[in-house]
Structures are given as C-alpha cells and as structure tokens.
Length: 257
Ligand SMILES: C/C=C/C(=O)SCCNC(=O)CCNC(=O)[C@H](O)C(C)(C)COP(=O)(O)OP(=O)(O)OC[C@H]1O[C@@H](n2cnc3c(N)ncnc32)[C@H](O)[C@@H]1OP(=O)(O)O
Image 1: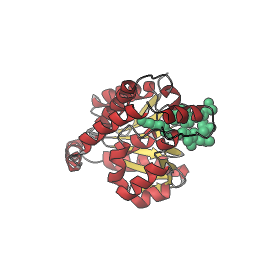
Image 2: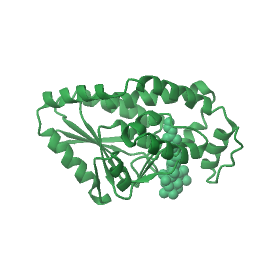
Image 3: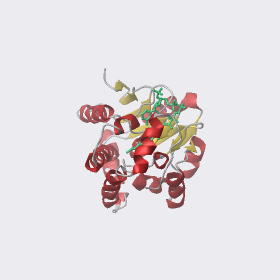
C-alpha cells in the first residue's frame, strides 16, 4: 500500500498522507507524492486538490530515523535538493493545492504546507521549524519560504528558537488563510476547493501560472545555499548528537562543534 491515498469528488482530489505514526516525510512518501502529481497532471477533470494527513498530525517533517542511514554531506545535500525540487514543482503546479493542517506541521511538514497555495489550519495545530533543536537546519526551502509568509523578524524567531506557533497565530501572521476548530479543518478545505472548482479551468490555470512570477528572484539562489548548508551541518558533532537524542527520546547535549 502507498503512503498517499487519493479520492476525487466534484473535481476536487483529496490526497491523504498515510504514514503512521507521525506522517514523517520518508523518501518513499516523497516518491509517492511525485507519482501522485504525475497522475493528477494527466487528469483534466481535477480542478483543485486538498492535501491532509491521517491520524494525529498533518506531518512531523522529514523522517529523522532515516537520517541515521545517510553518510556523507553530499547525501544530505541531495536529500535537501530532491525535497526542494518536489516542493518547487508543487508550488508551481497548475492546479491549486490547499493544505488542511491539524495536529502538527513541523519541519519538512511545514515546508510542504508552505509549498501549497493555501492553508486551512486547526486553532490548536502546532506549526514550526524545529530543526535547530536537532542540531541541524531546515532543508526543504523553509529558510526561504517562511520569511515570505511571516516576515523576516518572526522567521528568525521561529527558526532560531525552534518553537512552534499555534494555528491561531499562523492565521494572524498570514501563514494560514483560515483558522477553524480541528473538527472542521477538512470540511473547510473542501468547501474552499469546491468554490475554486466551480470556476473555469482555463482561468484557474492562468492564475496558477501568473502568481509564481511574484516570487522573489533570490529564491533560487537561496534554496541552493540552503541545500549546501544542510549537507554541511550533518558533518557537525552536534547534528549527530541531536538526531541520536531524538531517536533515544532524550535532550541533546550540544558541544557547539
Ligand atoms: C529537510 C527537513 C528536515 C526535517 O524536517 S527534520 C524533522 C523536523 N521535525 C521534528 O523535529 C518533529 C519531531 N517530532 C516531534 O516533535 C514530536 O514527535 C511531535 C510533536 C510531532 C509529536 O509529539 P508526541 O505527540 O509526543 O508523539 P511522539 O511520541 O514524539 O511521536 C510519535 C512517534 O512518531 C515518531 N516521530 C515523530 N516525528 C518524527 C519524525 N520527524 N521522523 C521520524 N519519526 C518521528 C516518534 O519517534 C514516535 O515514534 P515511536 O512511537 O516509534 O516512539
């Protein structure tokens, strides 16, 4: 069974991440997402997409346990580059994608949600980039997309402290389109998708082509630097300690090297 379920109703595709317990973005899940985009690209009937997570969370980010199987800085750099490319494809997709976020969207989970075009969040959801808690840094374009949504000051605070914000705060900062009770997240996302799907497909496609031009030009340089730094950071003692501490469910003891 794949890690992404897919159903379509009224021209709206609902993609459900099914990778318990935390919907971590394993390499398999990322491949399944790419495959799903390939399929949807060929289906002219789909006019909007809702992306959600099954279980307790939207997604808790890259699969930290998988990190321990990689060896070299170049492996981590490639991991970051392939995630960045996939999320870039999503951001530039010709069909609008709405992330329906409950529980947690952390690390790569928030980076995935930020590559979607709109976000509906639960008031009690946690959204953050906690990578520095692991002795590493964001690697799926989080350092580049987060400031665009929340402003640079809040992005520095969120990334440097690793502390998540609530769905209510995310909405106040402009990171989310709407905040609702957790029980209503999926319904609200579907309602928004159905409103969009009632419009003409050619006009939807033109808007999807045009809005990405408003993106900052430095973005491409920024994500390249981020992927390189993501590779470098895994050469540090503290990255090994941070990842190991997560696996062993203890606090990391960083040595600043
Ligand atoms: C380029 C991208 C880089 C990244 O994305 S780095 C990863 C960034 N993400 C994080 O650092 C989030 C780490 N996870 C957490 O902070 C917490 O977890 C949660 C807040 C999501 C949930 O907390 P709670 O409800 O107390 O559950 P629990 O016992 O911590 O987790 C349930 C199971 O899920 C596994 N898990 C959680 N997040 C990840 C992950 N990102 N990668 C791999 N596994 C993860 C745990 O280990 C555990 O598993 P078991 O039940 O076997 O003990």
